[in-house]
Image (cartoon, rainbow, N blue to C red; front, side, top):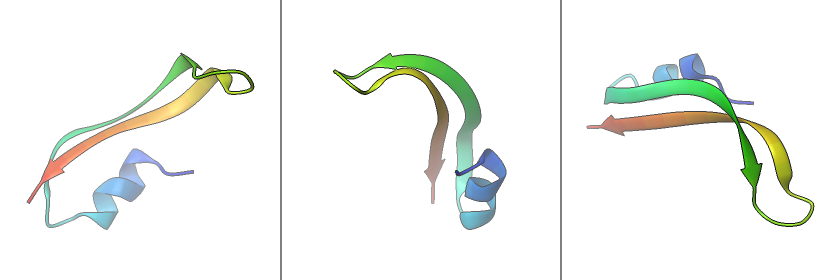
Length: 45
């Protein structure tokens, strides 16, 4: 799994504006719902 640190290390030349990990409950159809580990990552170069 990716982590916010891994993403920051992978894009050192980018200006990172959002980099946060969190959990949320997703409901994306049968067989794909429940708690999920997510990362929001926004960067510009």
